[in-house]
Image 1: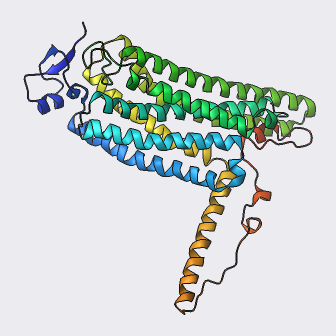
Image 2: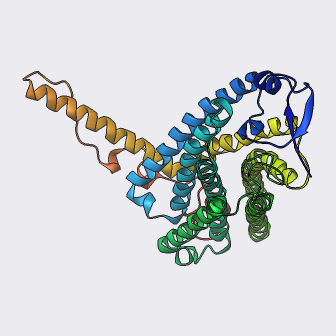
Image 3: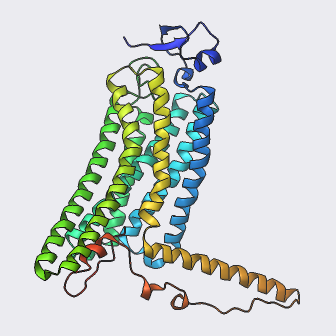
Length: 391
C-alpha cells in the first residue's frame, strides 16, 4: 500500500522547509501533507500569481469589453469564440489565483466540499479555455477549407450552440469530484498526491480529456498549414511569376511562424503540468516532484495571460474597435467636463465636435484584417478575401 512521506523528527514548519530531514511512512491525516512548498518557494510562487493574476484579468476583461461594445464584432462567430476564450481566462485568473494562494501561501485547510468546489471552478476555467482554443482552431480551419460556404456553415446561432455545449460539458466534467467521483479513502492512498480528495481514476480521465483537446488543436493547425501549402503550389503553377511566387512563399513562412509560436506556447505551458498529472496516476511522486508541479501549474495561468495577445489583439479589426471605444470614452469624459463647467457658469475650452465612425482614423472602410484566411486567399482570382478568421 502506497503511503505518504511525513516528517516527524522536526517540527511541522521545519520539516516542510527541510526536504532532507528524516522521514517515516505514515498515512496523511490532513491537508498539510499537500502543502509542500518551502518559505522561499512560497514567496516566489506568490510573486508569480500576484503579477500574472491581475494582468490576466485586465487583459481578458478588456477583450470582453471591446467585443461587447462593438455590434459588428458580436455578430461574428469568430469573435464569439474569442470572447469565450477571454471569459474562461477571466475565470482562471480569479479562481486559480485565489485558490492557489489560499492553499499554498496562506495554508488554508478546507473541508472536502469547499476544496472540491474551488478545484472544480479552477478546472472548469482551464478546460473551457482549452476548449475555446479548439473552437477557434476549428473556425480557422473551416474558413480555409470551406471558404465559399463558410458563412452558411458557421452561423452565429451554431457558434452560440457550440459554446453552450462546450461550457456545459466542461462544467459537468469539472465538478464530477464534487458530486461523487472522489477518493473513497479521503486523504490516504490511493488518492492523488497532487490534489486532496481526488480519485486517481478521475485524474487520469481529465488529463486524457485535456490531452485530446490539445491534440485536436495541433491537428487543426497542421491541416491549415497543409491547405495553405497546397494553395501556394496551385497559385504558383497558374501564374508562374517568380517574384510573386517568392512573395507567396514569404506569406507561407509567415503562417508557419505564427502557428509555430501559438503551438509552442500552448504546449510549453500545458504539457509540464499534464505530464505530472499522468505520472501521479501510475507512480508515487516524491516531495521534490510535487513542488515542481506547483510551479508548472502556474504556467497554465501564464498561458491565459498570453492568450489575449495571440488570439485577440493580433486582429486588426479588434484593435481598431478598441481605439474607437477609447476615443468614445475620451469624448464622453470631455463632454461631462464641459457640461459641469457650463453649469457652474465657467468658460469651457473643450471645443470639440462629435466624431462619427467614418471620421475616426482606421474606420471600417480602411480596415483590412490581418487574418490567416486573408493571407491564404488574397491571391485568388477576383481578389476574394475572407473576413471571418482572425490571426
